[in-house]
Length: 232
Image (cartoon, rainbow, N blue to C red; front, side, top):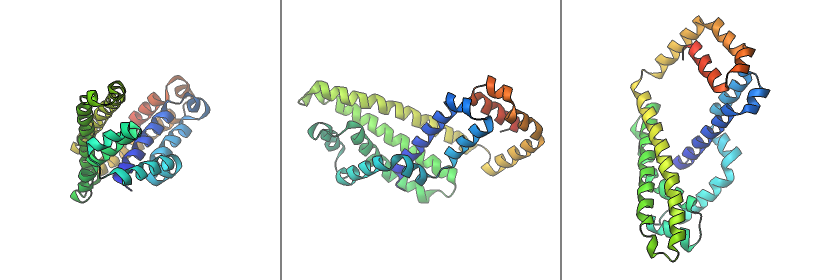
């Protein structure tokens, strides 16, 4: 799957997971275990499943535009917002993709271990988002030369704020991956967590099945307690 599409799919997965965790309706209708299983299902869905179920139409639009405009310079792409009235969010996606693709593709053969490859990819994503923010900042300063400077500033400033927030989010994720890369291997972590879980089997079952905890705690707090008891 195209690296840019992979990023869209994983961002959507995160949004679905957050909505599932924070849903008051699900908390009322499901048991803790059922709610937990639903979250695990979201995490276990393949990228192709998420793409086909939620993103098929949007991806067709993105791919069609990308095939048509990928050879354009950044200034030319931004000009399309006003000359051809193409959605600014779509154009910013193309600029992001132009900046990200060459870097991201170098990550595939460079590292053998998944965590190192993930670190490489997020470094690319952060750099690409930083490029978009810088390009937008430069383009806003050129709005006075446009036929409608006010409209130009309004559109580009809106995108600037959106991408500045994206850059912040991607930077936080990169730092998290950097921290993960410094920890012990995943195999050792899973082995230790499994051992602790076995020792605390009765407590795990109590936390999992407690109706009082289900009623009194938010689902997020219940998960945190559940993981603490399991030693994760």
